[in-house]
Amino acid sequence: MNLIQKLKIRKELKRLEARVHESPSPSAFIDLGQVYINLGMLEKTVALADEGLALFPQSAELRKLRKFAKKNQLSARITELRAAMAKSPSPGVYSELADVYLELGDMDAVHGLTEECIRRFPQDTGAYLVQARASLTAFYRDLSARAGIVAVEQIRKAIKIDGRDAKAHKLMADVCYRVGALATARRHIDELVRLGVADDEVRNMQRACSDANGDEDLDALFHRAEFRGGLARGAGGTSGHTGDPLKAARDALTGIVQIPGVTKAVYIVGAKALVRGDVSGGDDPFLRLVRVMSRAAHRAARRMDIGSFNKGVVDGNFGRICLCSFGDALAAVQCEGHSSVEAVLEQLQELVANSLVGSEGGDA
Image 1 (cartoon, helix red, strand yellow):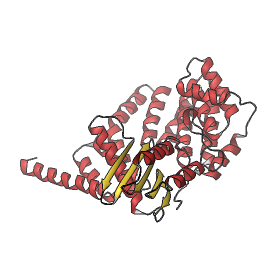
Image 2 (tube, one colour):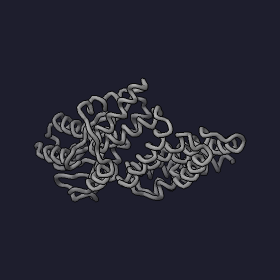
Image 3 (cartoon, helix red, strand yellow):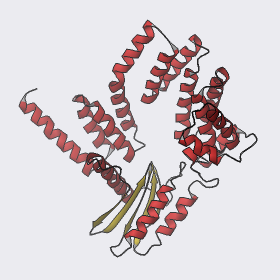
């Protein structure tokens, strides 16, 4: 590549990067990602796709871009594992390769490898646990009761083979805890304690389940989660809500919009949002604006190596926009210049700190 070609590519990159930052859209991210791929910049492509999916989580094209880049990024590892499997097949190699395909989201490859592993090594638990993780991925993403039930079936098969498999007990404890089967979760947590592998997350769940006894109908609890559109509890000892998953967020947002000078208030988790005040529903430009601002703040914090972005204020002729971010949750308000920023940020921080796992969308 000569100097003129390099200069042209650099100019095109700067143009596309500016377009992504100034006018983000799925097509803008995809165009830039294609250039990154052509230049062999696979890590940047994956990071770009993740950034795009944070803003446009329903974009099938962005998911395809990420999958393609990730597959090429992991192709050397896939080739290595397939060569090892051809030379000396073992349950560990099967499970590791299936895990790589699970990371890529290639569920057909995951299913084929795990089924072959189970036929060849029926007394190994690894393939069952990969299948369980694949089903749990679908359950947590879509809240599909069937996927959760299948995951539990696979975990139980692994525990039947090896009752001391800590990974199986951890998966079972976690999913039971999240759907509200605390007594069942407690039995698996107790086993993890006996095995000496209880971490802080397990200890938190143990405290929350300390008074739980009896048996629960897991199938019914999975169907309840699907019907409600949310989980009973969060991970690692964080309580959800046994009623409406977003009731607390709605109430908090209603309170925030009552603060003098606040004109708009939003609470966003993924593609779903609650809005209050002068906001025209889930398609209001304000939602996209605060998403873009949050991503820019996170990006700047990473580049400056100053930790994670949690909260901030942007001043302009429009007044002030206050943002607060925690995990997958983002809350923001637009307010007038005389509003108490401290009071607004305090309320936003409390709202996102109690971020819920389950959510409903587009509540205007």
